[in-house]
Length: 353
Image (cartoon, rainbow, N blue to C red; front, top):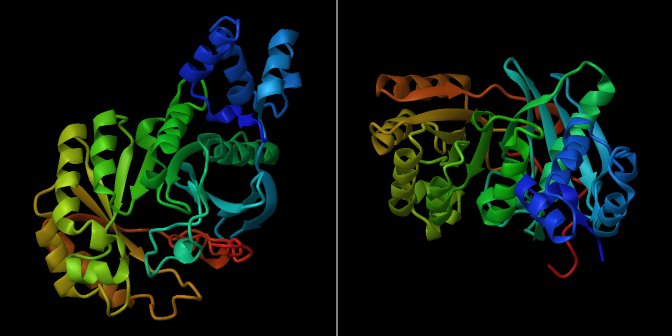
């Protein structure tokens, strides 16, 4: 049986666990400093922690569960990591260099059951959820890569937009958030973290009630039910009549603006009338529309990238209708690391699935 990843323990859970096993809660501060500040990869490297505690940690936990399989670097500096999990599954994680800092896009599941028709991540059905420790370790692996490069840089932003639907792995995703934003550890501010969902309305309500103050992005991609159902099968179960009230609840509860993600597909959802309808749907909600150029996926050849004039016309139509919006700058398209492209071409459909 594989040991539990210690990265999956929030500070409070680790403190409670240590207390249950006869150690002072304060020992958690020591362990966390070694894990997240000094970034050791072996418990034996925690030189000022007593030997009994080291032995206890070694008997129950493991620090490293991910192995780097391959690493690709884009012409724009984006780095895509392919990691092997302990069970042999593969996941992808992406490091992006922005003007405002270094951002990491993390994966939450092996495969994805949402099955959006334009997205590479849904080509393989969901095999399992990642543990909170496996999600945290993606950040740690990237930070260790930055440490090795030797420029003194640190991960400053996180987007939970990799393979999988984060709200379909809700508890582990929330534990991940608690770990990475803890000031005793990585200290990544909640306003520097964005969670993206395809629209699991019940989880949006639950997420709002947690008041975590992280950013929420909704993958909308269409302004009406008919069109959204054609390109996102989740809309059959959760149509706009269910999704929009959940968005309203989140905005009211968090007092935060919400991001609407909208991938532009040539002659599908990118015309002026679609922009007008989207503006009407959003109304005066506190929303920012992130227009995303479509990134090519070999298996989805029915879709093409919108012409530049259509993208600009869509943008202008939203602006004229009072909608705050922007066009996303692409990162890593040449190494299949951009939005909608994540899934390893080395991944295979699991046997028996």
